Amino acid sequence: MQLSIVIVTYRCKDDVLKCLATLPADAQVIVADNASGDGTVEAIRAQFPAICLLALDENMGFARANNLAAKHATGEFLLLLNPDTIIPEPGALERCIAYLAAQDSYTCGMTCRVESEDGSLQWECARHFPTEFSECAKAFFPYRRWDALKHFDPTKEESVPCVLGAFILLRRANWELIGGFDERFFLMYEDVDLCRRLYERGWKLMYWPEARIVHMGGQSWKSEKPRTYANTHLSSLQYVAKYWPGSERGVKLVFRLALALKKLATRGNADKQAMIAAAQEALR
Image 1 (cartoon, helix red, strand yellow):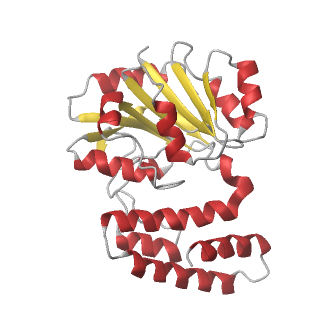
Image 2 (cartoon, one colour):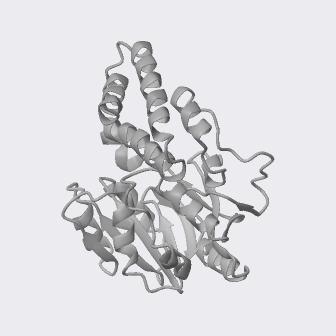
C-alpha cells in the first residue's frame, strides 16, 4: 500500500494503542510523541515494534510534530490521523485510497464519515471556513454550528471547503507543495488553516461517506482543559490575524467580554473558572 499514516500523541496511551491495532499491516505508520511521559513510547515500542516512532524531548505542539513526522513519509498518499480514532471496518483505508486515486488532479485529498462512539456524525468533518463573525459568535454561543454547511447530505459524496483534522487523506505531493501545517498554530485551527491554503491553491477536498472512522475526540487534552481552552482562543486569534489583518484587536475584545460574562455565570464551578482564568491570562 502506498500509504503513510502520521499520528501525533500526547498523554493518550490507551487510545493510540487501540488506534494502531486497527491500521493496515502494510501501511507505513509514523508516530510522533510529544513528550507524554505516560508510558506511550514504551508501550508502542513493545506492542508495535515495526512502527516508526519519534520520541520527542518536548511538547512542540500538534502542527510542528505532524510536520516533523511527515518528513519520514514515503507513501504516495499521506493520512493525518488523530490518536483517539479507530478504523472499525477492514479495508476502509484501502477504499479511501482507491477513491482518491480515481479523482482528477485538482482533488488533493478527502475525508470520510467521522462518527462519535454512538454512531452519530461529527458535523465538523465537512464544514465552511470560519469567518470573523462566526469566531466572535462562538465566544458567546460555542455549541451552535456556526460553520456548518447548509443542505449538506452526509450520505452523498461532495466537494467541501474544510474537513476535520482527525482524518485527512492527502496526496503527499500536495502536502509538500504547501509546506504542511503552519507551525504558528500550537494546537487547534491548524487543520482549518491547512484546508484554506489548499483551497486557495485551487485544489479540492472531498467528503466520501462510503468509509467511516470512529473519533472519540479530545482525549489527549482532558487532563489539561484550562490549557486547551486557552489554546482555542489563541489559535482563533492567530487565524483571524492571518486572514483578516487588523481585525485581531476587535476579536480579542469580544473574547474578553465573553469570558468576563462566563466568569460571572459560572461562579462556584471551580473547573470552569480555571478554564476561563487560563484563557483570560492568555489574552492579556
